Length: 305
Image (cartoon, rainbow, N blue to C red; front, side):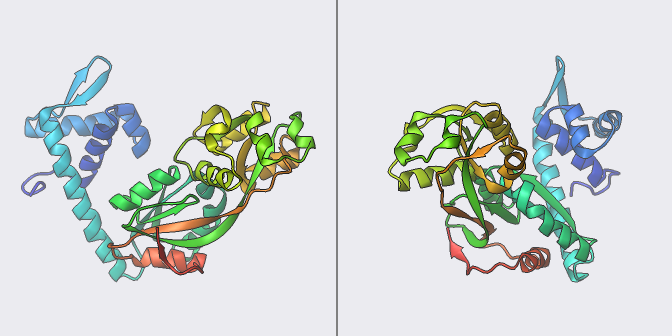
């Protein structure tokens, strides 16, 4: 066993893994909320105690040695088993300890999910919720790989290993800056190809749902003149406010800017979209995940995606 007969701690393993994954002491320290000196000391202690070089210092960066690469796989296994053991105890204690790994797409994580997580936290104060953010494709991958137990997305997912349930509905809007000519006219589907567009990156739920809507109107997504692709809703919103073009964005994201007069809604209705929660078909549900979904009140029967 990796820990038998040594003074190695799980915290040291977490530090090592964080440094190995980022290949950067400072970034690992920021992620772990530790001082850079503490992270450096932890790595140095591991190397000195066992007489093994885990990292090579190359210029201003670091890379794993061959020994470090082998140790990384073993360290991950140990932490995985430790987390599983802790989860068993937490579940036996009736949601008195434990954690729930959740991943959500940006719109959901920023504008819809927080109030539900806050309500869950008030009821189950001892359960740690770990929320990560990605686009729809990244969230589905995290659930598929078991990195997240629950994934909340707004785009369509085709993965036989995942089960999807509808949890809410959302409205997409076409919006432009206050000086844009589209803010004063009724658009036809054919008009959409005549303007500049600022869109989220491929793989995002907002982008995929918008492109599906375009196709339903007889407009091929490739016909749009996309002048800028950005990785966040806030960046897209700011670019459109600055007059770089039109975009399709959630009403929740657009609302503050619409109220402030920084955006105008275009008279071109888009269909509502569903928010879904994803779970792995073959993995057992934890009590914490069941409790969160019960609070959200999932109303749609599970359906494979």
